[in-house]
Length: 447
Image (cartoon, rainbow, N blue to C red):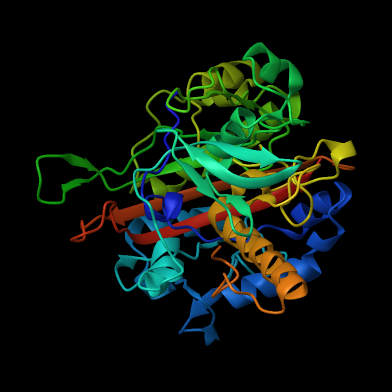
């Protein structure tokens, strides 16, 4: 399976669909059970409120979000909503409202027709500051440790960069664990097999999670071109398993940072995940074959009623069609050391000083939502903890202009989405800007 990663300032927020859904209250309950009592919903919700900028609703936060209004919906979105409601799913005016479930318009990170990435909001305003440097095309080999403290990093060309305060890794859920492993922070058996000195024996790279996506192969009946030679479908439908119980691993294969790590997602390896996937595909099939959607989307190419009706046949079909949603998380899990954690509640690596991780890898369990907005929330809170520590130690936060810089029950959560995209390429941007009109179905069922 191809595992894509963004090579652009702003990371995944520069190339993804821009969906900005909050994690759920139940996600926070899971995180607290892993020893993160500072990550309950009462602590998380205010951060989301502070992040969101939405002129239509009067929210004056940091990062622009917009929601498609009913009058803006295209034919496909209207059909999706009509048939989802007919199939028993409630209308959700705001999918980011606490406890919201049902069908509605997903909030997306854009203003007008332009995508707004994390780099636009948090990097662009400080590019000219003397205490900010951005080194493009630079690969970090490993973190340098001395007497239990991070003191700098070594680049792949063996240049050394010293740290005046802390080393904070934000390489994402695939490359942050790989970087830690090359630094001697990871499973001792793996490190010893590569002749890497073990600094801390931690489950770095374990608990990797993602949202498996199952597309029912139903596409828009019309095709269009954006002016080039490529002609494609303007919309399709996909199903995500949003609370998987299957977990994978990220393991380095060499001490050489230029050799990619081995990623084993282990999708749908538990019966609860397979049952969840079946339920999601069956719900999608019901909507696709309803009256309004039949006029907009083609029938599924190889998914017929006999397959949908049989658990065995549907399992086989899903196994041959699933893919990644590129929502990788939890490979440097935030939890107590006794519960398999790699970092503590402030993102500090267990057993070491002056070393933190602040990206999707620290999210304790993958949220029941696209991971970008949750990752921004975690980065904000970890950034605040760095700033607060600097205040305690030095009386002033010298380095941070804004803090972002720097199951007791089985919960089966499903999501479905239908989206259409206009993709004008903007001058000077390395990724497409999406004019998103996305309707999403988000429901949670306890089993």
